[in-house]
Image (cartoon, rainbow, N blue to C red; front, side, top):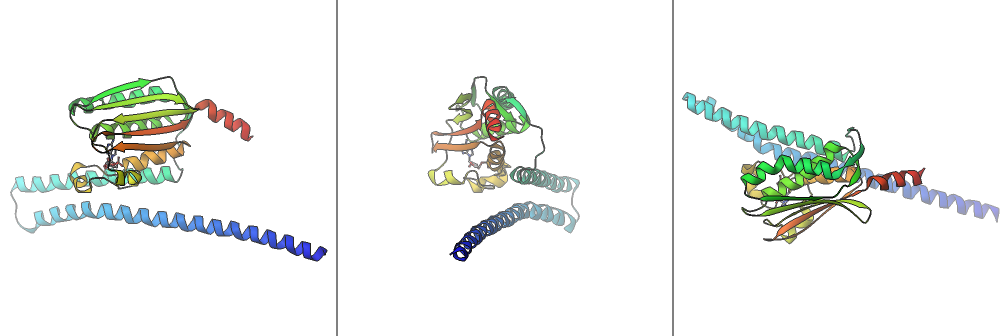
Length: 266
Ligand code: ADP
């Protein structure tokens, strides 16, 4: 009857709305969980440097010291405070990029030129570490913010140099492949153990946790890189063989592709 079919329709609508609400609640729950994990991770990372500053300062105050001893204590405080500042700045950047809140202007960018500039800034560090740095680029345009795209290249190349070995090599390439702008950073350095590969993009994840506090590395570079890539509608992947090297591949929509998509959508 009519009533039956109306009731059926109503049940259908209610079911669909229920699904929507349930999905929204799940998403909200996940966002809250991410948020509290973020706060927990950040607090955990800040606890150590705060403890160091406190210990240095209180032991300097505990009894009369020589000027040299005071200087040493102050230098330790400064160094640790600098690390905290970098940590806080990186965390704020990560939070902003993950929340899609960077208001940096976007335009059609020459990914090859931006990458060349990023690599040029790292050349002296590569020389210092006796790592050769090669660049192969084809004119490739994508849509985005040039500072943020430059940061992606900087982070990947600086890791490829840092986790290398004397006499090692880094090959950076930019070209268009299958409708994507592709930035590839390949090194023949230490490589990443298989079990660590799924985790390297997580914030604060480091393969060698023990060396992190002395090396000044924060374990945030790849998390920021991934967030920046995703903010540009791109993807980032890694392949690696322990002891042989790693390859990070970033794929971004080509500039023409973005315009075509936007035209289709309207
Ligand atoms: P970090 O500040 O420790 O370098 P990242 O987020 O940039 O943090 O990288 C996370 C971890 O992934 C590093 O601690 C390192 O163990 C590993 N890693 C990143 N890039 C490379 C690479 N090119 N070769 C080997 N290991 C790498």
